[in-house]
Amino acid sequence: MKVLLIGGGGREHAIAAAISRSKKNPQLYAAMNKKNPAIAKLCTDFLLIKETDPMIVDYAKTKGIELAVIGPEAPLAAGISDMLWNAGIPVVGPRRLAAQLEFDKAWTRIFMKKYNISGLPEFRVFRKGESGTDEYIDEIKDVVIKPAGLTGGKGVRVMGDHFEIEGAKEYAKEVLKNDNLVIEERLIGEEFTVQAFVDGSALAFAPAVQDHKRAFEDDKGPNTGGMGSYSDSKDVLPFMKDSDLIEAKKIMTDAVRAIKKETGIPYQGILYGQFMATRKGISVIEFNARFGDPEAMNVLPLLENDFLEVCVAIVNGTLGRLKVTFRRQATVCKYAVPEGYPDDPVWDSEVIIGDINDALLFYSSVYEKHGIVYTTGSRALAVLGMAETIRDAERKAQAGLSGLKGKLFSRPDIGSDQLILKRIHHMDELRNRG
Ligand code: AMP
Ligand code: GLY
Image (tube, rainbow, N blue to C red; front, side, top):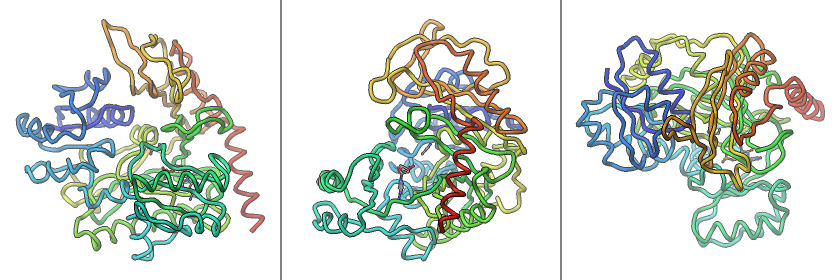
């Protein structure tokens, strides 16, 4: 089977590895911005191209591609999925109208309200140029300000973390010059992610994962694309109640049904729900129309099914007939990122990849020249530990990191006992206060 993967980061390396493990005799092709050396090695052929460029469709036709898998959000927002389907190539990755769930936060909040999907915080949408933000910020006070469009994870600003009232008012006005805006109440709790395969109606859920957005230990420092993530050997995380996951799954199932009603388009691909477990229950932070990066690296290596079989079921609408299962192991994923990341990262710095012990290694934003691996300004390499417990998985991840040498840093606290206990105590404290 000839499969085209679009995207070239760590998440896509995890997808490429899952495709390569298939028994369906896959021949992998890739379309990526920059050459990811590890993905390139798994490919029959690859094209270096902007991941939103419609020429990808011509490439797919020329190569006789039978299935495409889209990793990142930008090609979904650019309608690459629609173009491939129109050319007769089935795609794992929702068409543009369905992918709005990710790339238009204003649309999504209004959509959730219209279809009575639970987990909706107090919010208001402001259109480009509209006034009244000062009054709304004064009313809600503890606010989060979200540009409606894609900002690469860097546009959302949170009261207390990024600004106080006056700063929030300024930021809202600044965003409104160029984009629509959502202002919503700040939720307090613990975040978790649930990812699901979706065939338009059926959903198959992966275990919950928690990402760590802040650059430095103890959740300090600037926001990043995600420094690392963990999952437990069961579907919920240690700070979660089973009912939290049940609620999250219901919200995602309701959203998939409502998308079909609202747009007429079945949602086919990966749905990523970002939730906050709060004192009062589960709230939706956002939806993404793709796997998370790093969260894909936690769940894909645990998948017991043939990933390509799952992909075929997604595009054929037969996922409901497939029993999708994940190995009952805990995972800890940690990114090694260039010193100075994300504000002032060292570029073009050599990385030596030595013995990573029992960990798995994923290549993200690195390039290879004359057999030597170099950093770019973004997250470089990720290691994944898998074991019976989070503690052992964490040790394996650390042992993996010890094999990477260069001007890099990572977060030793991700998956540590101390951090897990902190999350549990935080949730206990919030729930007891209620
Ligand atoms: P997003 O780009 O929507 O994922 O937002 C980035 C980050 O901002 C999230 O991972 C949360 O940590 C934070 N965030 C977004 N919305 C809220 C909210 N309503 N309350 C508290 N934090 C939020
Ligand atoms: N790790 C967060 C994301 O992929 O959106």
